[in-house]
Amino acid sequence: MAIEDNPQSREKYGKELKRRREKAGLTQEDLSARAIMSRSHIAHIEAGRRRPDVEDARRLDQVLGTSGFFVEFLPTLGEGKVAEHFAEALRLERQAEVIREYAPKLVPGVLQTEAYAREVLGSGFPSKTVEERDRLLTTRLERARILDDFHTPVFWSLLDEAVLRRPIGGLAVMCEQLQHIAELGNSHRIRVHVLPYSVGFHALMEGFVSLMWFEDLPPVAYVEGLKTGKVLEVPSVVRECQAAYDHALGDAMSHSASLALIRSIAKEYEHAQQ
Image (tube, rainbow, N blue to C red; front, side, top):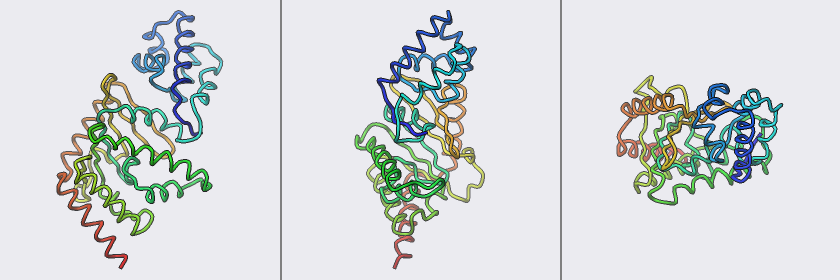
């Protein structure tokens, strides 16, 4: 299922959760313990600031005895533009003041050029129609607009060297993509660090992670794998993700050295076309 964030429906969802929780005579702390969810996450859902995932909704239904109500209510929160597992992360991304991402294989969505994004979204399994791909592409490109403001969010991108070396879309597409990243880095809009192959194993080897900080919310981490993703908000878990990021960052190349490598590989792609 794919969804588009819907603030009004989120607010209604939160009010209904609060009503049914209070009807059951439970505090947020009580519900937290029984549903195996953090109290802060429940508070954010009730306030309409966050969207529960399917597993959250199932646990709420089980604890509150609501016969699948909260699972069935999920589709009304929106429809059509991003994978369900990414919906909450997308909303948080728009609110974040600081974002630090690690990408093991692909250029992060916020940094993708149109040609690169079109190739990524048009490939893979199951196959997508042109209309489906174009709808996803529009959303992907809209995400990049968070960089239109020069100051917010502060954006750091930690890239595995594999991201630079895998020719997604062919030589011309990769050349343009790497030049785009270099331009953002040269303008100081983003900070880029490359983890070279020579590092070998590192602390973030297991997969993609995005760390986000906010003005009025606690920090979160978003991790993603094949057909799945999860916003992590338990403070101890988020701190572990932050520590792993810092550890890997210590193994990475400096910002200036990373930009030099990115420009050099872009030139390799450019020369290979001739």
